Image 1 (cartoon, rainbow, N blue to C red):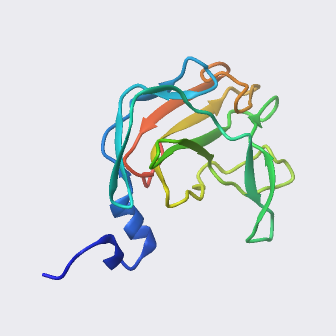
Image 2 (cartoon, helix red, strand yellow):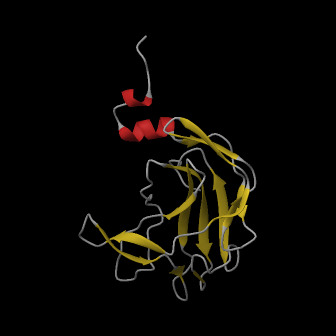
Length: 177
């Protein structure tokens, strides 16, 4: 049998699915700073086939303040817009924040990408963000605003005027709950 490695996998997306994944749940939850997320348990994960781990850490992830959006009629990312969403007259709005770790255990959070339109607060939360190959997604937070309440990352407490659902995952799943 020939030597086998991730280099033998020609498709980059399949190579990443095989070589970059979480093996244990971090039991993610709201942190002591209620605008942030913590891991309650040690997370074991791989990046490009190499094992890494991150011990339980309070106040580990904070959310991005801006998100690059696709401008209408363009395939290129546009200028960053505020990641805040929801508010009076908009009804309940859902957004997903993906939580990742690099090989050193540095935390990264990504908001779901969305096309921009006349109302920058109207975002499509089902579009997955671009995540670098050096980051393993280990979970996500689904934030649903109350009908008349805005959510502003790093300002609004999780669970106050919104419902936050914490999901641990090995890779970004095909269906978000």
